[in-house]
Image (cartoon, rainbow, N blue to C red; front, side, top):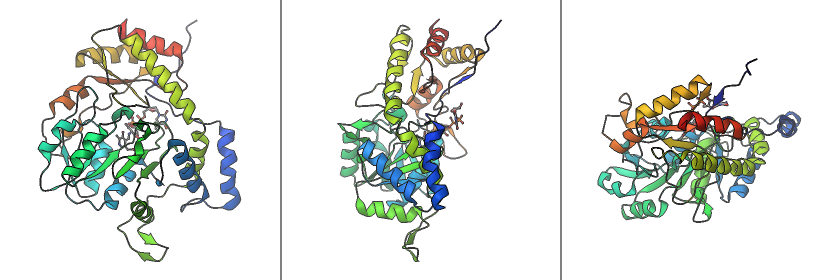
Length: 361
Ligand code: T4K
């Protein structure tokens, strides 16, 4: 009799046992406090900071709003240099804040913005650089900061993928003017939906907290151009429970990444993201020689109920509805032949073996 297999998707959330979540949630039922910077949100901020090694983490509704809060807190108006190889939220957050995204092509090995190309795109309208630590692979932070300083620009890191990443031994959120991360269900640490904004600057931190709460100061006067960016107590409870499993999830990803990489390296036509500093291995991006090879692998996997994802396809500079098209050859080329393989805590090594076999035969 044939064995019925469950479908395998690109990821699955790392979830604490339900009992541990409800134990924390009981406090909401006891107090009746559900939102508005309640005790669980404050505890989630404190414990996440302590785990990661950063300060001034402002928890919010999602990673997109985190980016928008960062842009607002820095009062940016003008052009923001960013990467075309990213999720659409990087660009939409810039546009929602009435700024203009200006693309700089990527380094096809690291898949991050190419620092050597940033200065060519700086104009008198440029106000900031928004690089992305793509798939949790740390950007060339020193180079980017040097360029920003020389041109008096702000730096916001889109660190949506970068929970747990270090740069030169320190939490990656400690760099740039502000970092924005995501606690979405598909991320290393999840609150179902959620985000966080991090800065070393106490004044910006306080401003971010006011922006998150409609712009109010002390529930009286409106002192900032704010909105509703609050994380709820329910989301924070889930985050607190999941935080206990973050180290295990990071260790597991690193181990599984190494297995995939060593096995798939046997096929010389496949290549991998180059990691120079640090990575949390939250995704397993695999680069095929051609798009046809990628599509062949996708059909073989799909036929077995396995669903990898084409992150990030297409390159966001090609979304003509949003931005005038400017050719970004490296990003467009990589986007056409990169595939993220299933990678998550409960993925078995036996399933990984099946995936590897289906790709390299
Ligand atoms: N900047 C960057 C660079 C980003 O990548 C993102 C988001 C952001 C900013 C903005 O952060 P958020 O505002 O989202 O916090 C996902 C996520 O929705 C998104 O957070 C993420 N990046 C983006 C790269 O991917 P999809 O379209 O892949 O989601 P979906 O529903 O197809 O999920 C993928 C797989 O995950 C499913 O096949 C099954 C599994 N899954 C998904 C969900 C939602 C679960 O097992 N449980 C779930 O609840 O977007």
